[in-house]
Length: 116
Image (cartoon, one colour):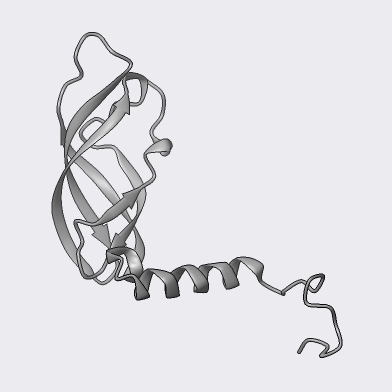
């Protein structure tokens, strides 16, 4: 329990990240963000379009298997922009936050792809 006489501008919390996480979750719920009910899972690349011969960043059409606890495996299709040196390939797996109510709404950590 915190000291009622302590200066709130200098008082630290025991779990600052937990406070931020709960505030973020609250804000997502009130603005009806589909990610408000997100859980940690992963996406597996089923297929990806081929990059063009030129251009550092290009649009890629990916088909993903979305997998998370409590959510049936779902196939999602997305159009994303990647640098050529991190182009996804079938079989790649990356961690993701996945909406329970809309499993095709996801935030994948594409930075986890190894440079090619």
